[in-house]
Length: 263
Image (tube, rainbow, N blue to C red):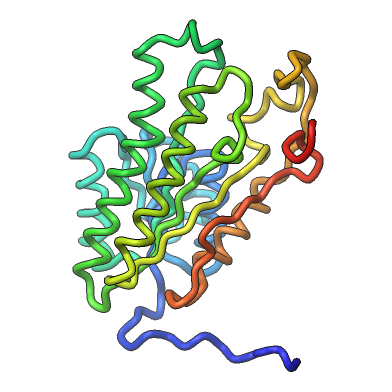
């Protein structure tokens, strides 16, 4: 069979330069994705709780005029609304939300996890993801031409938990439900939604895994990690598909991490 080498068709009225918003863009996977998108020619809006790390990400992108920093606490509805107001004011539209902000929370046994720590993880990983998806959805629905793409950052914990991770694991399972519902509700408006489930990308959040991480059998073992740039390239592929196509779920992980099989 002869491969299809045709270039994807651009929708009528679609912008020549696409606009992306990336939450949690001040470090780790969010920073890597933001830099990869900027390098590919996207205009990128960087969102995160602290302005200084966002400025550092912008500087790594060459301080390009196509990069906008918007300090945002994703747990605060007003802050999230202000983020998408800034996107609309600057660019007039949004083509991609990488819904990435998240936290692991304390790695403690379930009986030792405080209600306050539980709520903090839920507020960031689930409520924050919902608020950002809602803000992006509203803008994508009313812009002309309407449509866009939302990529939620899940986790391999959306498939299988780690020890002492009940809040993180529960929220990542919930993100999968968020992804499915957004995919369904977005069809009418050409809003595609997919999810990337990531395992052991080399970031500050996973640094301890290189020294030793609790295993299901009670042992502690160092785990292989992969370059966050490998995740970013996958997000870029998902983002640059035409809206007629969607990667619903993608799993990208360090090949030798203890996930498949018995570890």
